[in-house]
Image (cartoon, rainbow, N blue to C red; front, side, top):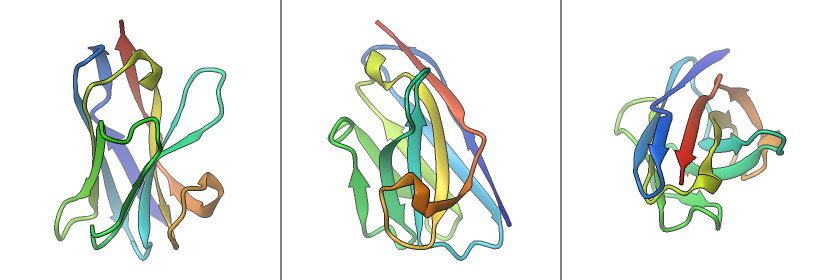
Length: 121
């Protein structure tokens, strides 16, 4: 088993930026790290993903051009830089690990506890 810990969430105003961090520990043999979010009363949705080499990324259309996912070289740590935040981005953000490239939550086997992001108008 592995442990994933998200951090960096908070309360910001529209147009502000936040950087989320996902730190993984334990045995890491996964291929991809994904970011998902879930707002109150909503289903969990894909946000972004990156493979361990850092050479391949994917973004949901709703965040493309505003969010950037990256991996710290040589570390089991992934970041989600969120710029130009909108109220619609308000949600609890989770990081997760998958053994293969996917944007489907069902393909991810290890999950963190999440970090809350709230964006006011």
